[in-house]
Length: 337
Image (cartoon, rainbow, N blue to C red; front, side):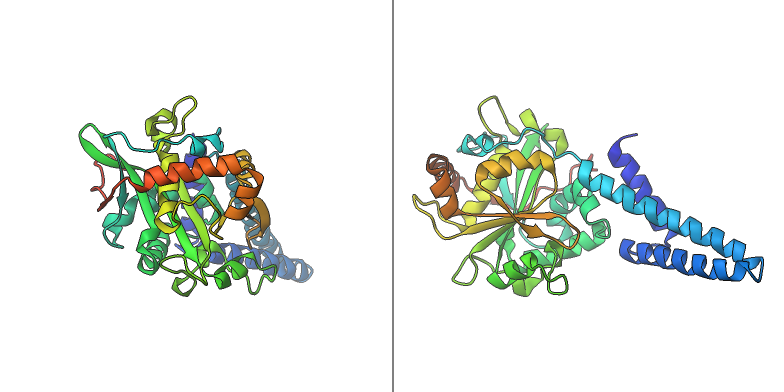
């Protein structure tokens, strides 16, 4: 059984046993029941046989709680990305135009019919779902719908023509967030800090501006079925999934031969991504409530530390800026999981 299957089965057990409670509430209840039952059990065992039953109940609840914590930690830390050899060269060497069987697409509205690639690819990803286990598919759909309402340009995906049918194979969500949002996400005060999935419309702008100088890379995923050569990646050249990220950034930030005062922020604990992040000049910028690391970089630092690489990226984004974006997500394929 695959890791993803084991993970889904555990969530099914937890959700079934919890009578469809959200995971935080389920965990809180199991921990509380464990503590109360054990305390009362020890006290009552001196007076009444019922205490033994309470000790057993408390012990079982405690075991469920510990198993849940351990499994969620394992899923978050051990899940592999769609590729394990991602490097900065994949972006500097990304194709500057698309082959005819690929196209960039923006959703035409914020409906499930248009946003299903983002919701489903994220929902079925071990690492992402493990990082936010309480965010089931319905909640994730509501979150993405609210983000779309705040900034329609935040959503862009790549489709491939497979057997005569257009199919989404890679997705990105890039959010222009206010300086207030950046401060709240990076805050060391846990009462003031908000998670990325907690970002609401007031923290999101429709474009970069005087008070919005940060692009949050909230999601970048390639369908594992189309990783590597499936999205056009070759020896010495990045794939169209890499080009997708650059084309998306170019929707907000005009390619330039000098820094534009724009920073980029993302969160991950996936060690397979570290070489690429370090190569881009990203530095750790704190941790989220869940312990996930935040990383950021600004374009001025990139120009200062790797000017040649920065120019390559700008050239590639300038080329991709000319690629037309189609409007309207393709209908869900018949074999879509």
